[in-house]
Image (cartoon, rainbow, N blue to C red; front, top):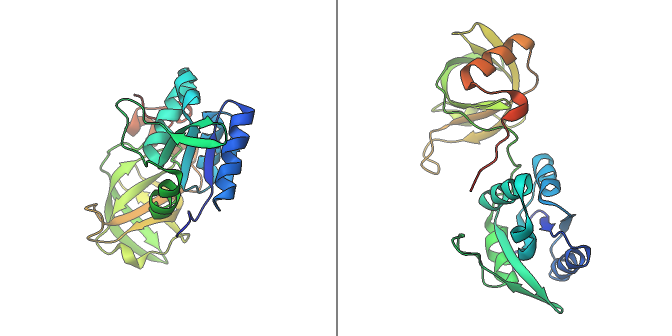
Amino acid sequence: MPQPSHPILVVSYGEETRAALVTTLNNNGASTASCATFCEAENLALAGLYSGILVDLPSIIKSKGEEKIVAYTLANFFPILRVRTMGGMLVPMAMPGSAKQDKSLGDFLTKTCSAFEPRKLRVFRRHPICLSTLVNYNGVEFRGFTLNVSWGGMFIVDLSAEKYRVGEPVSILIPEFGCTIAAHVNRIKPWGMDRHPPGVGLRFDSLTESVESVIAGITRTSKDFDRDRLTA
């Protein structure tokens, strides 16, 4: 049976429970990343790729404040299996009102997590903003417009997105504000895929003071207080 291509985040406030969850996953052929808090899991998910989350249900119930918000965000981004440990067994437990989850650890690993496309958690919230753009790619300028903008990058609609390559550098000119931003190609959405407008996700390499002023003005947010988190 297929196994997840990347590690599973394991979250529990209890050290013994966390160790038991990790051992069970390892015995089932899955690699893991052990986390004592949901914020710790969030930091890992911002920096690397993961295939899902195995979490101790009592830890979700006990979470408060920022921890509760982060737990909710992670559960809406990754496949998640909520469990209780009973002796040497893991018993899947559904929460009232939560999305349907797998009924066994085996299904969670071999069906749900193995089919999930691992990707990093977004640092900043996306804002639906339309701006005209000129993208310079390999010395050629391409006209487009943004579908959304964040402090970390932007998605630009382009009907021939296949011409781009992930990781390659670009420069983005926003004529309305007369500013240019250095970036690189982070994601490509071809035409006709997932009922999503075709185009490229561009991640900013750096922001000058003048560009930060433009982004603050159009998003009406501060870079330090615009984390991409959900609220229940």
